[in-house]
Image 1 (cartoon, rainbow, N blue to C red):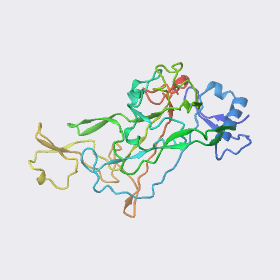
Image 2: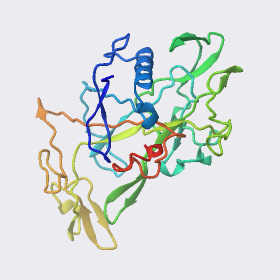
Image 3: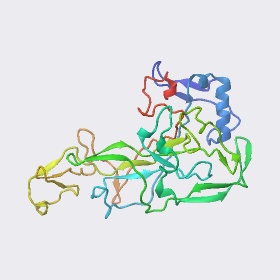
Length: 330
């Protein structure tokens, strides 16, 4: 069956390009049924699933039509932000998962055991605890199976209102001498399948019995995690620090807002803010299109929803390019 064509050299990362897949349903708009049939064809007609792990990937384009101005807004260091954030938040609209999500950092995720950071409700995202709704279940059909939840009560999320404060961000250190932040770890949201609701079994994939992931329990189930916040650079701060011995800040003109006074060195310090369109020899800078008095900012985001039990590369991130044979680390 000419479904796939291998397109890379041996001992490198491999990719398979989809050719003609003769399925009963069109592939152009994937849903549960077409995905199931597509993977069934692969399983029955090829040995790919026995040799490799399969990842289904896709892309989404978001266009924010409303403009925004940074006038009057300051960041945690007291000056106009040079970056903003795009947030991707799990809403749990069907109520099948615990909610709100729990918050942790890279050092709270381990390959074979669950961290006590997530036990109970101590790590729940507090700013979202009031953004929940309780609703009655309904009859749904998934992969040809019909489930009736009409007599059960579920808890899901609501839309986060504009102006919500207190959301947990990255674990960051700031070096005042270098005037530089270092991201120790991004924040991650973690959630798990509810095993039962009202005594009715929902999901049981050993997420709480400790057999597949050490330390799990009903108060600390294994689950899924993702990064909710992504930085989008608007302006570029210089990699170097400018200094001056001028005694009064009032004697400065047209200097960046990030200027600070170092009393130990008796110096004023600041990082220059690069003009839009300027890129230095190291590639630092911004080149966003400017039309109609507006900068059009573009950014690519790689969003990963990872299974805590099966993703075995938590410490090092993405797997090494020449290590594909160790497929448990993919």
